[in-house]
Image (tube, rainbow, N blue to C red):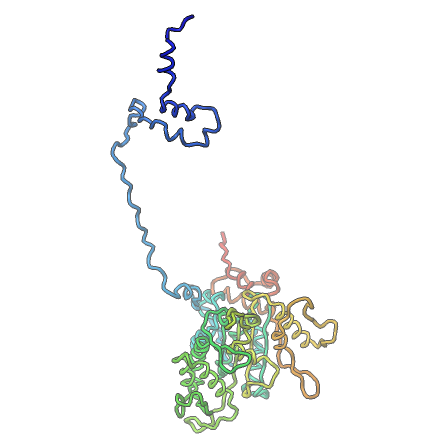
Length: 508
């Protein structure tokens, strides 16, 4: 068949292809099945823009649909109230409530006094703390928020076997044949076995006997780098002073022992405080110097401690009688925190051992077997904590060795506890509890270890009867019931007995 197009038309018209057409043909199509088009953007770039769909029946507004522009409603600002002030949460967490007006008043309840604290006939009874003494114990921070003081009408303590024993020690040191003796003890025991309350009872006895009572309620706060510290020049090894903590201790001591310290006068020379000490200044006024000026709190405390232990004061009080120094009671609750490195750092950014803190070192030196630092007598009563205590294997070994020496086990005996030879041992902790060696070669130690256990069945019965008389326990107290609760409480652990006693049961 013959073509209708001539050869010239084919050569001139169709022989040259437009450049735009060639460009269009070179671009891949969107519908091309090749995979290479998926990795290029040329097709999308040269594609025609999408046309707006015509408004048909399907695109009409739905029934009751608004055609106007929708405005977003502004978010409502929620009023969260005033933020708590600085220290408000801590004050609420450490708040102590000592009275419950909803509890029944126990009729015929006896008070804790000099006569009742050594009366074995009322053993197992709960004795109420006198209200003036409660104020002094508050100043010493003897009460703990975890203790159940808010359950009863007024605070009271159980007269247990250990309380009677401690009361006789106070009687002997104050007026008996053991006048001037120093008793050093470390309390241990299970959790909620009553160690902190036992320290409170000791402080109450010291206040009644007109002793000078010094208490350190939270040893942990002295080693967690929450207070200011500074090196003491001229000390080797370097000692660090905590001025704010020392000032707080002086303030607590003055508030709790105002009556005793106001009758004692300064009898020694203190060169560092010569310009501040006035003639006939009382020890209460001397201690307030460290409260008013924190920068001199440590020299004031050293002078205050030296005055308390003055053996033969030369000054006389207003009634022309020598101002004899009273015995001293020192209590610490939570000794394990002082047996490790603190959170403080020295100039080389190395941790400072707790024994290098002058405040801590002063009170730890009272446990040593060196010549007594309390010439007028007193009691050093330190306690461990089972609920808030760091794991320190060296301290545990030191307590086991102290218990073995107390039971007569020789250090050469195979039964004597020794630290693990492959473990890291803190020699400073072990040496703190070692007995001193006398001239004859024998070792002697006045430090004792006392383990606080549970209440006896008779003491547990008196404790549960106090719950019933206060209106908390709605049960009939019988011997079988007390024996059951005594067994459930792990052998009369007082904290567990308290949990069983405050459970409310509804009788249908």
